[in-house]
Image (tube, rainbow, N blue to C red; front, side, top):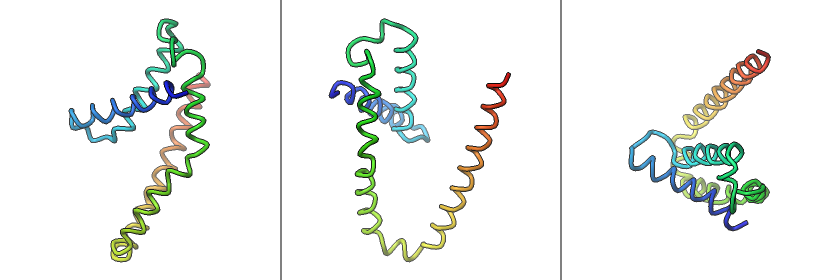
Length: 123
């Protein structure tokens, strides 16, 4: 379990390092997730990679364990919001409008991606 969790965190660290070195306009953990996806796809495709902590479902079990306690990760965000209440009061309407717009855009992109994927799967 610890080795599998280390792989997940190592992918995140690698993503963060690559983003900072190359100055990419992308969050490091997102690139780390791409690295983890590539690693897991390679594990499923090539038997040589499926050794040690990558063998079996170790990474999957570690990720499910983290997802069970995902709500704990919102505590620091809540504390950060409480610390910045003055900014929230000053720019609250703009923040609410941006959040609403981002939700709408996210929903539209999700629907378009789903429709494109279903069309490709039918072919």
